[in-house]
Image 1 (cartoon, rainbow, N blue to C red):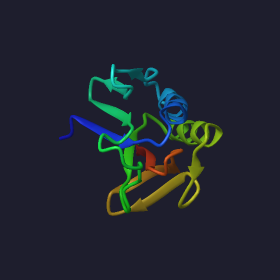
Image 2: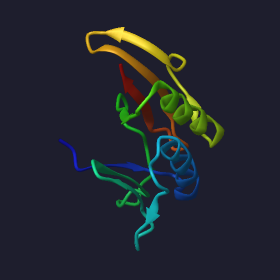
Image 3: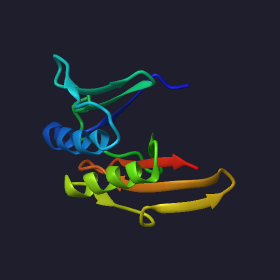
Image 4: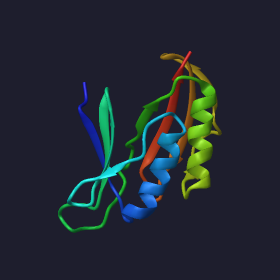
Length: 125
């Protein structure tokens, strides 16, 4: 459904360090800069990017927004989470673990990146 997701970053350097770590933990190669200084993580299923806001205003996270990253295993989701905490992220919501609900059994691990964007590692049983 989606071709790409882009989030605003207050510090491209801090955000790149964070996303290189969390996405690297799930097998995604290091982000690459374009001529405008934006960083892109490209996979066969889509693109994730970080950028200073084009309008020149401060980067702010979406209130109520979350971006979920698919993980092959609960161990990869936990590694994503732990790499994020070790690289300037903040663990939020419940601790990483299994949840059950309308969507079935899911392993979730939530973080806020250095700019406050909420992301989640997701493994579906």
